[in-house]
Image (cartoon, rainbow over all chains, first blue to last red):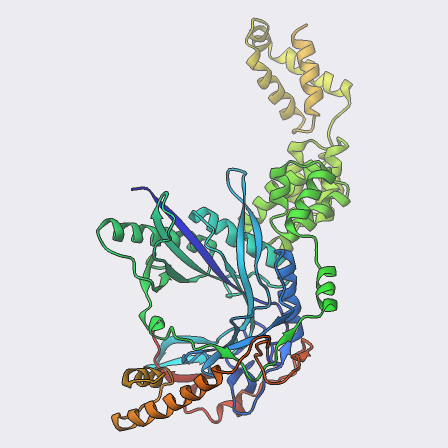
Length: 477
Length: 95
């Protein structure tokens, strides 16, 4: 039987505030255990939560970006469960009245088509702490630094029909929150975490199958693997005459499998109720307007602008706007004199390749946008050939100065003097009578041999266009 | 609406309360009485009344995003039954 996959995602994004959502403790990652967990985070008796204004504004920005309904009044609720990383015995979340309501996001698929994915809601809540299960004499160690870090949980509709669509949507949300500057997007540090609901149904059937929820997905690669595993597991189960049980499953990257998390199921009765410690949140028109005014250019707008302002292909524009940082870098290269098309190629191919090889981020690039722009200027004005430009780039990468300095120091300036090229070609023709004879007898492939000889003589510095032209003129004479 | 034995056991479990068998009947009775009171309230006509999530007619005050808390781990952990390397130690939880 042919099975259709149905996927919906819940994505937890840690908001990039300095302090916690309900307390003035720092949210910085990587501090000594429990040095950033204050009495509010710890749930000491008598403490009261006070809502962080930036967390609200960041949620609004997201809502505006996905064209969502913004609730003029939203309510915080207590989600009750006992777990040691949640000292209060409840998590402050939003249930009936979330701050961001229905919206949508358009994703790009591999075949070039686009698809609109519905966003059900996005709500504010506090993160829990971390449990460490190394052996502490049969006990677990608890670090509550993360407790109270603001999260925006973004819930999608079950609109995705393949694993590729689900990954494309997750990447798109990731791109968006990073563009908006509301999340650092660091998946290793847990700033962006994905839970996936997956079910299968025979093609053509309208009713959804029973779904399972996969937790603990912290990379896009794992996401694809976890979903593939789970899809196959459900197909095998149903085709073997069994039934899918609605449950939460944990993805184990080491074993590449998912397994049941029964303990969480048992606690799945959260008894939500409005938190009496927090009043309803009212979003004034003024606050919403200022969120709208503070919006940066979004990926789609940037892509369209790149296509029209720089005459780039859709593929180039899409690639360059993957991240805001890369898009800015590209624009700086162009501002420093680089031709747009050439800049697009260098940023996405040569530079990206070198960074990848060295394991560096764009922000750590040894070649600045200004210097890359300077190099491209020298290609465009024929000072150096495209081939030698790679050599100059390498030297710049190794810290040997800017393009002009490298060209000067290495004597890489292109030879464009026709007379000089001509005399070199004359020598080569004279020295290779056999090849000349074969060429004239019709073996025109030998042109490459002659070009190679000229380049060898000139250490690659002769202008390739001129070399070809003069060579052909002389060989065919 | 009245609660039976198994309802009380479930609620007690969710609240992590240990009840012995003799207490269960008393709780069933008390909690059922509370629900009875809510049923009485439900008889009131609430057409045209906007539901409220808080008894105060006010909106939540917001604070600016500033770090105002220092590290007071030592004091905070003084009341913990067991700590090690800065971590709170609790009975093992395995997932």
